[in-house]
Image (cartoon, rainbow over all chains, first blue to last red; front, side):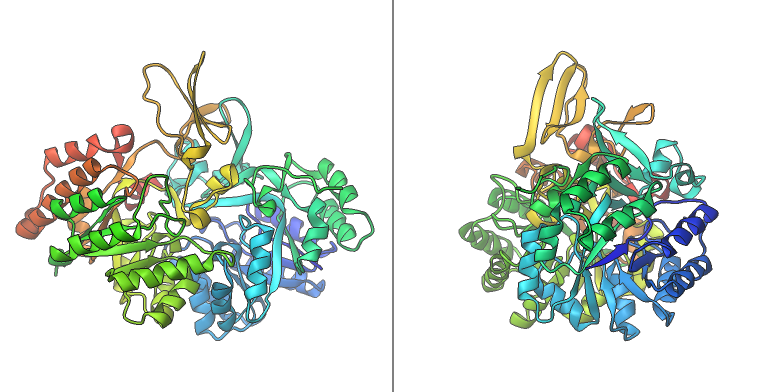
Length: 300
Length: 337
């Protein structure tokens, strides 16, 4: 089982981002997804910076994948997409059908079907596999049972990647909720996301942490954590675990996942140790076919 | 050039009486769903049985109108046959098109019923011509419904770059999130528009009068709280009031409806082929009111061309049936973003 660091969801200053990926190069992770997948206005990291990061990671032995923008609105978004697709060195994760169209047209044969492509059944997986998708990032809202069913029905089994840690990306909008909070419009947002390294907490009127506003993306407040479900993930034949970036304790977290995957500590121990590294309470409901925010403890 | 004469009015019907009302009030097309999870308005007491579907299709066809079947949720391995059987039934009954989101289903429909017209649902999240053209080239999709995320110039640009007809939302409940890319309801309740055809479903809703006011909850989560002089709205989870920093406000969106009536000439000029009215979950009275206004406006646009002007009574009638009695241009108007 491989360990992947998913695409960065937040907007950080360029140097902070460079330092972050410098540490990732030293970490026990097998695959790193890079690139801006959330907001086309974010420009601290230019495309060339991302390619620099990608080369450093590749030299450190990591498989590097460029993750495409989830919401494509303009011709300039499409231009960036074409640059990703037309570079020869790295795989691409398609997070939108425009990316699929570009990859297919360019004749790519080893791309990743991203979690927002909504692959929920074997017939759709077959469509993408015939077009060159060789890895499937499972939509976070999909339960284990449904995932197992999909894999049983596939003509050719893809490599399977499950989001196993992080605040869950739950929704995308044309509207920027961070700008809205500051009474700004998206086009003149003053890049306020830069001041919120892990987004802005949204609470109910009785103070319960519910969601996280991250620009045009809405995330869960709770942190999805499948460390305790590792036996089930292995039993289902999941090939890759995806961990999403956070601002603190990332090296420790990746090391913990590595040790758990390699069986150096039990899943229960790993889950227990992860508590100190999490910015919020855990949840794992989606994996169990329940509301995502719920937390289930595996039967002893 | 204008495409005024080509704009179709596509109206919602959650029941046979609503379908007949829409046809009588001037809808060119009525879109409907079966009573199951195969469509994105899988609500209790809503939608069509086989018998009412056949009667609805007959009623519409007798009057020269079309019936479009929404089959726009994503099936999974365990329930796949329910969706394909529904496509087979739709083809057999003679619907004029099926509205699909799932590529696997599109391929099934395209291979099994090559004469069945395919529309790409808004749930397919296709926001660019590249995405839309993929569905066209691989499955023969002939029309796409755009998610409510693009500005007017962006809509126009898409239309210039695709052979696929473009349908846009004109009026009704406003999804703030990109349709097909929202798991908020799944996160809170376990039921999602993508897989269950439901958002913020009624069985998870609780209304509670408390000392602090009327509270609305979704699976126990406090979505909003209303003082006695406020009108308590349904707890759609993206339209509640929440606390961010020191502010408590509609952090995602107000309870409001999309209304693009004033953009009608611009949409026509851009080459939009059809205007969709949201609201299969709404009453026949809503369908009648909204259909009449939009029929009158589209007919007036045909007659008046560039001299078209929105009548105040149209706006008043639409505001009457709007969520929160207010309306917005949504993403068509850039500052909304």
